[in-house]
Image (tube, rainbow, N blue to C red; front, side, top):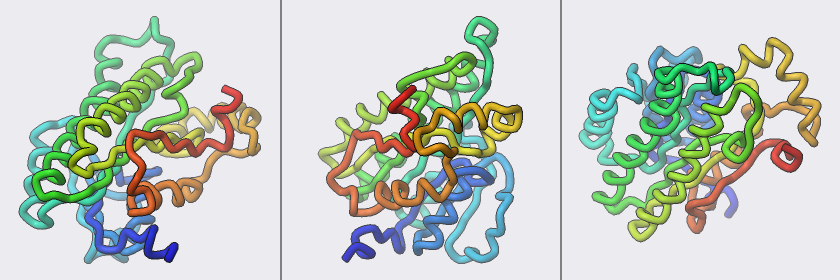
Length: 250
């Protein structure tokens, strides 16, 4: 029964930012559970996609480019009809004090973390509702949505905006059966954080996590399968936090 409840076999899942990091892990997790993955990122995947040749499609593109996203969803419509699951994973961070960050740098963070994610969610929802699909949209936010630290003002604000937008999406699309939830990771080594962790930040944060370690990509597996499957069929507009207890003391 539990295997059936958490099953995503045969589901068409769109995952952004799949070339490396958490996006690559989520894509491979879903593929290993029988899903079909449509991935988009600005570079080729840095993992072996040959194992999943029949179930994985990859598009080189920038999700902040509206025309690239339009072509992506046109392909989804023509080939698959619609998507069942969307994971808005692509994101960017920049460690810089707020009074030092330039307007164009702030705009770049919001373009990807907020506007692009909202555009993809909106297009996916429209497709799901048109085809009467009870789909699931998963927005990857962060424990920084509810707190901050020096140098992360822009990133925190962008993730807080996406977290709040998730609630609005959930309310507006619930009657059509489209669920929208936040997955809020704590501190995980990833393509986005490695630069800072390698400079010593990782050890500082590890000391503040109640479970006494940083997250590993596999720590997200249960939450990712839950939100993509029928096991979360009565969940929408909520935030699922996976942070080792960090948010309890931050």
